[in-house]
Length: 317
Image 1 (cartoon, rainbow, N blue to C red):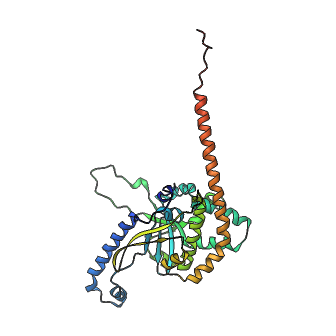
Image 2: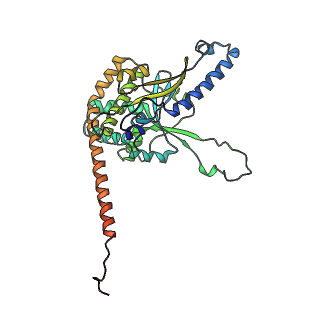
Image 3: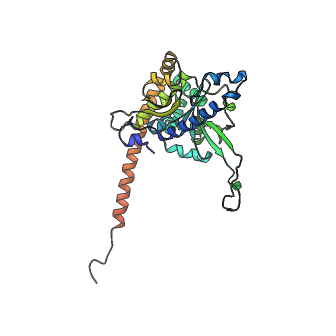
């Protein structure tokens, strides 16, 4: 489904993302709590907290065109960054097939199978290390919530994640298996222990630039360009603030993720061939969708017209 930004024809910068306000208030609660326990923090391990009285949010919720192009949220663990698409369950990932992001990756896998360009290989490496689907695994049989006499129950569940690209590969039957390998997302230590995943700041910036650029190939219907505003409310050292900029700027993306501009440019250069190819493919995919909509509409009118034809007796009684 197109984002609100695209439906309006432009992406305005004058309205903050609502979900980020909710998260910033959550961060404020944590900041307040940490300040309250400072008197008890006497061990060396908490010295960093003492020196930085307000913790910056390690999670950034996306919305509008940015969400459509990239995913639901980004997360930071130390110097590593991740993108997540959140789903209600594993089965819900199939709904992604209707979205431009999924279709871009489907087309990319097809092209990569025909062309061994380092550009395609680089994208797949970044995607498998930094772009994931996350969902809760719930045993619905345990949810006896219709009994009014029961107390509110907390049921332990597993939260799992898998690489978005691998999910596409399996659904499109271009993998040697019928299911994607999943991992447990128990807590942040899950990622601290998995040193092989996560992207450096400059990699994250270049990867998002790739996703944004190929998405614009699909979304730019009238050729006037599409904006990708960042409009996140954050709670930081100076209180609440609105962080905004156009995500079409690789320089500003690199600054957002604390990366090195030169390194981000180098990754962007490697991805450039695949980005150009996939932007063209996404333009073609949009044309296919538009043509199919026209055919469906014509067929609907045709069926409706045929349904109105009444065969009588020629006017004779």
